[in-house]
Image 1 (tube, rainbow, N blue to C red):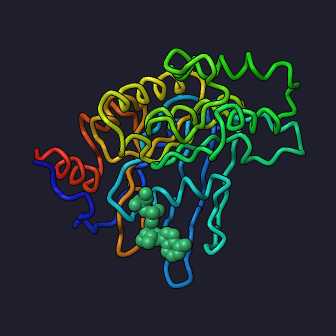
Image 2 (spheres, rainbow, N blue to C red; image 1 turned 60 degrees about the vertical axis):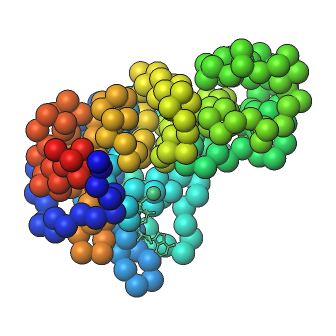
Image 3 (cartoon, protein in one colour; image 1 turned 120 degrees about the horizontal axis):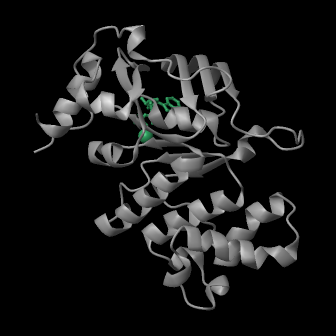
Length: 277
Ligand SMILES: Nc1ncnc2c1ncn2[C@@H]1O[C@H](COP(=O)(O)OP(=O)(O)O)[C@@H](O)[C@H]1O
Ligand SMILES: [Mg+2]
């Protein structure tokens, strides 16, 4: 039996060396976060002193509820909460920022726990990123078909898929449509916040395969409550914990090392609670 997710009793300060700086800047590093702190009116929600992420690969972000995992993804994305104060520095090197008209956020693709497709046809959903990128209309259909194929949707849909309403798709298919939109956005960084927590095992397996594939050429940040999922798809693990009432990054390491011998007491406790071992 697995223990409740929300309880972590370890409140010892973590050691900085448990957050390994594995990637040299700027050659191997895709994103560096320095002195990030996110505050609400009455409390600090999250601090990350120094985190270097790779240019490509899947990074599993884990930790108890309330430790700031979703807040971190939102801070990086277009959905930054305007009621929060964000301090610190995020350097992103794995995107091409030559086009100054584009906001940095346009390089991120996001897939949330609940599917977030627009209430219109599959075509109208997929055309959003293409329009933003000013892709010529005559290229749209082929590009859409390619993206749908990449996420395994093309052969699951009828010939008239373009007219089908996106919200009629199953939850797993909607998640994969969101990923297809990210591909059409030509994003180099994919942010996933518990993308499979509401899905059946078959849909989960399909999404995990896609996430692993994306990690070959892109940076993928995956918030997950499933240790099994982190083991299956991640190359690196970032562990958050609750220190007092704020979330902190307490460990970052390669996944093999993380699962074999977690360095921080917080990670050991989290793994123990999740596996009961
Ligand atoms: N806009 C906000 N104002 C105040 N507190 C917030 C706000 N957004 C998030 N929080 C708080 O920040 C903490 C971390 O939330 P969250 O990032 O959702 O955690 P996680 O995803 O790790 O479960 C929670 O205690 C949450 O209530
Ligand atoms: Mg969350």
